[in-house]
Amino acid sequence: MAKDTFVEQIADIETDFPRWYTDVVVKTKLVDYGPVKGTMVIRPYGYAIWENIQKELDARFKAHGIENAYFPLLIPMSFMTKEAEHVEGFAPEVAVVTHAGGEKLAEPLCIRPTSETIIGSMYSKWIQSYRDLPVLMNQWANVMRWEKTTRPFLRTSEFLWQEGHTAHASEAEAVDMTLKMLAVYEEFAKSCLAMPVLTGRKTEKEKFAGAVATYGMEAMMHDGKSLQAGTSHYLGQNFAKAFDIKFLDKDGVQKYAYTMSFGVSTRLIGAIIMTHGDARGLILPPVVAPVQAVIVPIASKKPGVVEACRELKNTLTKAGVRVVLDESENSPGWKFNEWEMKGVPVRIELGPRDLEAGKMVTVRRDTHEKTEAELSSAVETVKALLTSVQADMYERAKARMDSRIVRANSLDELLAGVDNANFVRAGWCGCRECEDKVKEFAQATARVMDDENTSETCIVCGKKADHTVVFARAY
RNA sequence: CGAGGUGUAGCGCAGUUUGGUAGCGCGCUUGGUUCGGGACCAAGAGGUCGUGGGUUCAAAUCCCGUCACCUCGACCA
Image (cartoon, rainbow, N blue to C red; front, side, top):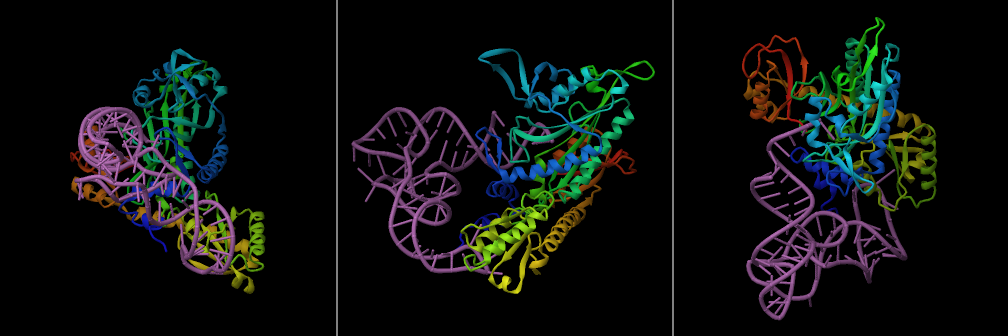
């Protein structure tokens, strides 16, 4: 009899969200903990999600002329100190290599926390003329930031990400690229991750160390907390000046280039889990799900069942569906729960009763809706289901987020808003003191500024507001 | 770094108050019966009780030290 099953353990996700999250990530075999504190081993099932994300993003980057490249893991410490804000922001969390080859190194090397510096140093060599611009590159890499507290995918000491770095001849072009990449992320989140996001500019306090302006997309998790899911930074000439990225322009004048960078990380996997998951475990969007459909044979020892399942698997595989046939010895009920926990969007049950009628049973992971369909039209049925699961997941997440964005005209209203798992929009004058006051009063931070021409007043000091800000508690 | 908590089989835990044969559930192995929502029967394998010292005839249990991990703060993608 089922006892302290996993489903029972994680049933109450609204009240014990962090616990639910950690359990589901480990028990669905997405990751395991690494021997070094704060690191995770990404298992095949989890890594497959990342591969699907890579595939989708690469296609979008290529459409913008961005090519993949790779830069070294180790960065001379002196590089980090060239841009003042950058070193201040990252120095506390870099891991440093001091010894190699059995000897102490003359100059310590830091393990990249991000690659603006080393890429900047290379760009300075590569860029001589306006004809060399723009330079549009992206790298898929691991980075390391020694964080105090960690959680799988959301904040780990080492994580995988994509960091794009571009250099341009003009400010307008670099700013345009910054916003374009933000739009790419937003569209990607929507159509691939079924995840609605809020986009906008970050406050000075929240911006990337060394940037002129940081733009971000924020996603709402089940518990109402916000997760920064992607960023795009306009770096101005800060890094160009620090690394001497100069070019001779058409007018014969030496000028500094304008650079920008943008990135998303394996944190996106955490975002998917916490946006869509329910008490039974994961719910993965079909576009990035490692397994899109699972076939569970019923009474598999009865003649013809296994054969029919294998045939169905081949048919679906040939049609481009990522499908798995679970031929393990477990009971059907066990398999149902297992694959639901792992978030597979569509389950197909096939047993003697179905075979007799030439049918199969399909069950959606998101709604648990169970329907019978003709076995002969399995490909069309499954593909249509995947499409509608993907679309419906987005619509539900969007409706939930929209219903949880509230307005506040006082700090008390703001506090009540975030206490009730909402994002709270409010006017803000733009000063650091007022921003800190909100943090202190409501444990909420400014996530994005989504209206920069507001006529409102500041929620803290009552002066004229510069921006409408979305405040939320954040991961 | 501040406050609290936990270390006993692969995982989750009981046993510690009051010292006396190392336990339970899940998982695992073998055989059999099962299969439309986490099946059942039978037989097995598996433990330096985090670690170092002390007290005692005897320590998972009491004392002192130490290490690791978790939660909440602070810090951050």
